[in-house]
Image 1 (tube, rainbow, N blue to C red):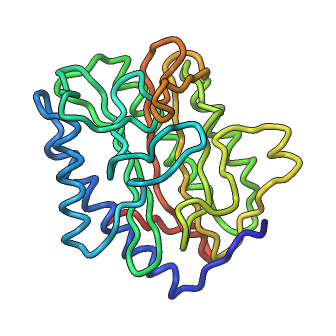
Image 2 (image 1 turned 45 degrees about the vertical axis):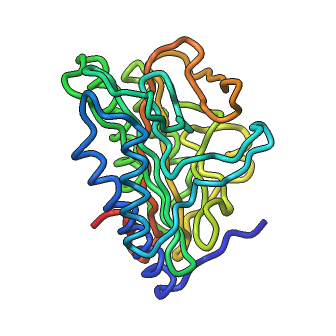
Length: 259
C-alpha cells in the first residue's frame, strides 16, 4: 500500500491534534505520583480531550486477539508492561515504579500519537538508565530524519545505541504512518531486519510517521496477557516507551506532538 504524503495544510491539522496529545501527556506527567491510580489518569485524559473538542484514538479499538475493544483513552503500562496497559482504579502507582503513558487524539479529521515513560517517585539508577536510553533512541530518529535518508540507517543507529547500553529493542511492535487514520503505511521498526532492508523506507517530504521505540531492560521477548491487550516482557524486567508524531519536511523533520 502506498505511503500518503501530506500537504503543509494537512501537516498543520495533524499538529493541532498533536497539541491535544501534548497537553494530555504534559498534564499526566505532572500528576503521576505514588498513590495515584491509572484509572484516575485516564479520566483526566478523557476530560482534557473532550474539552479540546477532540476524540481519544485508542478507546474502542478492536483487536483480533482480544475479546473486547480497548476500554480506555490512554494506555498506562507499569514496569514490566511494555504497551497497551489498561488503566484501572485498582492500579495504584507506587514509589519506584516506571509508567509508560501512550495517548492518541483525533481533531478535525486528523490524528496525533505520542508516548512517554515517567518515574513515579524515586526510582533506581537502572530504571533511570532505561528511560534515558529509550528517550535517546527517539532523539536519534528526530535528529537524523530528513528527505532522502533510508529508514534502515536510522533504525540501525537506534538499535545499536540500545544494545550498546545493555538493553534490547522490542521487535513485536513498531511505529507506523499516521494521518487521517491512527495506523497508516509504512510500518516503522526501531531495528534492522531483512524485511526492512528488502523494502526500505526512503524518507520523503510530506511523510508523517509515529516513531515509537520500546526498549526492554532484559530480553526483547514479550508475551500478551489473557485479556488480549496487555503486553509484558517475558523475563519480567522493566520496559520503557517514547513516541512522537513527526513530519518529514524539506530540511529535516518537525515534531508535531509538542506545544
